[in-house]
Amino acid sequence: MNEGPRCRDDKGDAGPLELVILMPAVLLLFALVVAFGRTSTANGDVEHAARVGARAAAGAQTIGGAQQRAETVVAESLQGSGLSCVDAHVNVSGDVAPGGQVTVSVSCVADLGDVVEFGVPGSKTLQATATEQVDVVRGGG
Image (tube, rainbow, N blue to C red; front, side, top):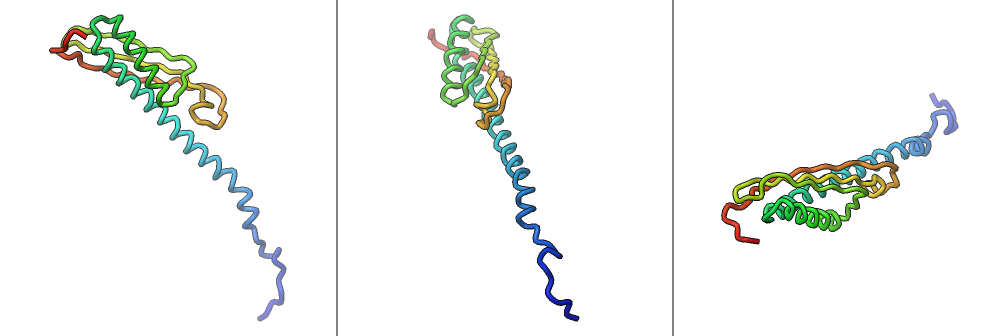
């Protein structure tokens, strides 16, 4: 019942070949997971910037002051997070009177190469909105 010596090629050892075929797919999957994570982090950075912008705007006495405060704080927040926006817009609306509500909307056009860090071409617009209640008993500041 001995069939005699068989050449390795008869059955085939496709390990290295399978590795060569599957490795690009595995690397692509890994890159997509990293890209998704980085995009989620960038979205979180913009949401955080909107929240701190709304908090700062709620302390202003005028809507113009609220706009200026929000723009400053949002720019600092985005810069601190490392997210560089090609085009950023901050919009403040609402009532800055005690008991009112101030809403800050942030729009950031981010270069995908910066967000994903793989040299991906194109850009993505990240948007977030936050609303903050103006303190009823705030001082004059």
